[in-house]
Length: 518
Image (cartoon, rainbow, N blue to C red; front, top):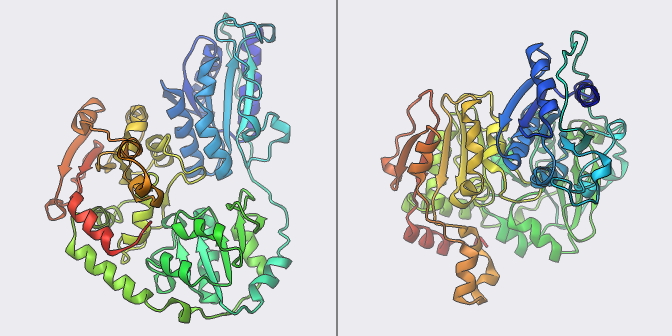
């Protein structure tokens, strides 16, 4: 009964630590864990989701942590199944999410033996995961590696007294003195706020903070404040900021996706402060950073007033915004034009997920401004495109009218993730694939111009794919559109819908010729 008792102990400890949901991928080694979870679910103590592919399962679990704010565990068998979780673990680390990994392992005597499925699992995730439940702070992944015999006797667990523990991340009392002084210090060229991904409970405090300071703002869509702060937003102003940088940048939340944040690497005279949950500065150069929850840090800063004016540095921003609007009307079938169209329809939904990397950048600049969209999610921790569909499905699993917008290459990376459509809410669910035939974001990288044609082709990674067949495979309705004026939205049905958008490449090229967006 040793394996049975071990499985009960490990899973019970996970529940007591706050885990209420588990995503399982079956295998011979972790079968006993699945049997215990089945009994726990039957007793009404946990919710279990099932998958067949570990990489997607890890990202689905990550998505659940994004939606609930609580830990979610993914349970896999031994061997390379464990290694498949690494991309999700890395993303969870940089997002500071409570992703829990429960991995079955062969007994210790098999380590270093080269026996089947005897890989070195302990420490496989390096610094990206904590290995001790008692030392886990809930701000990064936790890895529980469980040694199990393959054979076991099934028992009957008594889970009547099992209850999920409270889960609360405590950053302690934030020491904001230096930050408060820095904000209030006058500077010759003013302060600009850059707002990355925020948790929903942080948004109200940040909104009032921005209103009080009344300085220019560059918000990510994932801040949930893009439309609410539009009177302060520097629309399409990244090139202007590089040419006329402010004295100070205050970044709140996740790392921004725009070009100017990366340009700060070469602007050492711009003083940068970051306030974020993972405590990482997000730059290779020196910068100040304060780790904390923004809904506690910002109130601790105290009352602030408008402290500077950089409008003289940003002449032409208003005109640039108008030019963008005119270009969107002129080239409606370009990729930016399509993002404007999609943003109108998606804003009616309950949430929007933006797959890296081009969709989020285009939404930031070209999406509609009239209707606030507060729930906009993305995986921006490590800026990879792994597991995007799975993260979307996990984060919106219980939501109706959930929209996800992905590039074709990003979608192809995670088609296995669509297996979860049979377990999540599908009413009004819309998956948009912008099919521009590969990783076209790389075509906008400046250094690509000096590369040879062969290298350029490899960078673009052209990927002809039949997305109608993909929709059929996973039981989705399918729509293909090439003109914005032909798109009337999506009929509300119980089945998820795959919308394949094929932008006009000529219009896209002409649009981008008007704006240096590299």
